[in-house]
Image (cartoon, rainbow, N blue to C red; front, top):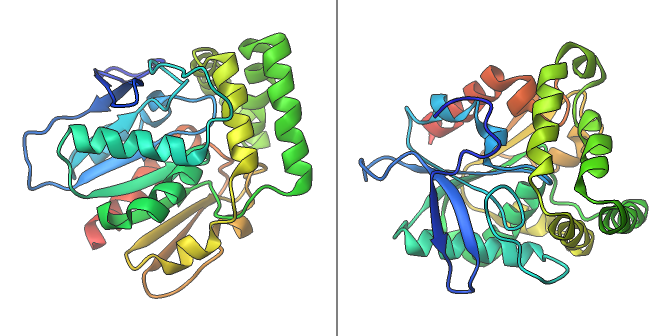
Length: 276
């Protein structure tokens, strides 16, 4: 695996629903190893995780899908893309690969999908993690912004939308000091389908409050937030506490720690995996 790709996907499968799902698979060689699944954020791809995957591969089999409408996966002609449908795609992938249990890590949109998956298939989870994500639903203001985003995507296409979105995902300091990373994440976003991104925005708008789902999970839980995240504040990630819950605050990171603080994020994920 080389760095700075627009997708890491090295495999593709047709799901029973007709969806062509592209995904990265580090290999099924050692069945005893845990299966680590990483879900990316909105207008991203599996390549969001490219700087974290090599470290994680030493600790398990790593699966990183391109979500429907993103990366190299196909874009169903429907709207909205409900979080439950993304979760069903993941479940179908696991069934295809004969994978019984996973350690699931969801970034942003990937976290919303992870919560939907946990609600439906908690028996498949050995552990659960939200990375820059929240179990809370959108506020009324955020719902209005989702409608605006969907309209802009349909009217103007993916490129101007992503160019406006991506810099806001980084901390203010990193927008200047990490311009190459900002450009790379923007280029990943160009690969998303505009209609699929609009359908995804409307799906995020419609997602319910899944705080109770998170509270009821009887398994190790990792919550990761960035101190400078302007998209999802740490308080909205750290909504539960308890003996099974680990909270990690990445100082100086915005919404994209996998690009802004990849070594620190990998360290937190590995420490969590090894504690289980």
